[in-house]
Amino acid sequence: ALRDLAPTWVAVTVSSIGFTFHHVVVLGSFLRPSDRWPAALGLSACVAVAGAIWAALYHRTGSIVGPWISHVLADVAVIVVGFDMLRGYLC
Image 1 (cartoon, rainbow, N blue to C red):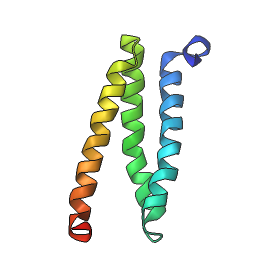
Image 2 (image 1 turned 90 degrees about the vertical axis):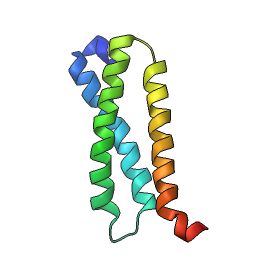
Image 3 (image 1 turned 180 degrees about the horizontal axis):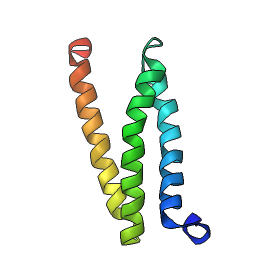
Image 4 (image 1 turned 180 degrees about the vertical axis):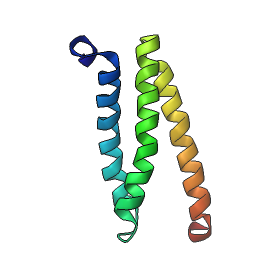
């Protein structure tokens, strides 16, 4: 809907920033207090780039399917990496 009120680049930027703020809070809750905000902000910068790519993909295709599948694959990758990092603690 924002594309109807503003240029596409503004809509993509605003949507990726909103997507990022959610992840700052989520990442901050999983990190140690001493590393929490610098790490959460750094990792969330990566999320902002991904959000912009997904918003641009949605704009280009007009379908949520591509961004959704890509997001699922990114989530799976994060889970695999996270499990690998925690394997020594969990098993």
